[in-house]
Structure formats: structure tokens, C-alpha cells
Image (cartoon, rainbow, N blue to C red):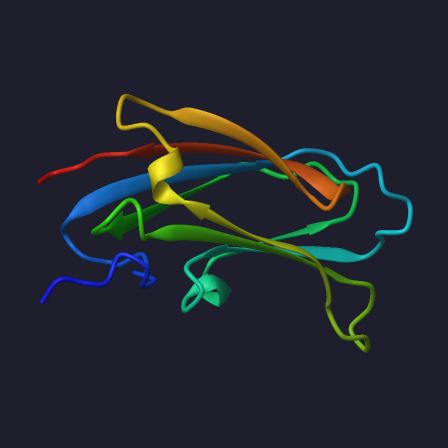
Length: 133
């Protein structure tokens, strides 16, 4: 049975089409963001298993992740950025973004620069996908 074109198809850990993504977090110039920043990467179902934690304004080592997908039009990479000011406070969501895998080229790495609602650090997303149909 074929999936409906409007139905969400999650990123899958399988032996199908590889999607490599490298996340580079640039410095943060927002004075109101203090404490720990947490960037979750993945699909909406497994985003908590892939996280980059860093202090606001600090240098962050780029991280690389590998996913598998079936349909580039339906599969998405989900980025969610949170700010935790202290252990006792609740995490405040800075932003949430869904990026379709189809926005990345099969010809090599493609770079996208994003920022959540003009707050938080700039993110450089370097992605490459391969289709093995």
C-alpha cells in the first residue's frame, strides 16, 4: 500500500537512503539567553535521542548525524532549540523547524543557514543525501 502524499513519513533507521547532516552552531549574541542551550535533532519521534548541549555564547564543536529515509518529499529533519536558565526552571523553547530532506541535493553537501525567530545562535546545516532506488 502506498502512503498518502500528505502523510508524514518519519526518518527511519534502515538500510535504504542515507542522509548525512552536520550541525555547526555559531556564537550567540542574544544577551537575554543565558545558561544551557539544548538543540535537538532528528525526527519528531526520536529528536530527544540526538542533542547538542552548550552554554549560551560559547563555541560548539560541529556534530555529524546519519539518518536513513524512504521518501525525500515526506521525510523531515526536525530541529528544536531550548534554553534552560537553571536546573530548577522549565526549558523555554526558542524555536522549532521542520526541514524536508528534499531541500538537500543528491549531488554533494549543501549548506543552509538558519536562525529561530531571530533569536538564539545561527545554525549552519550541511546536508547530503543519496538515493539508492
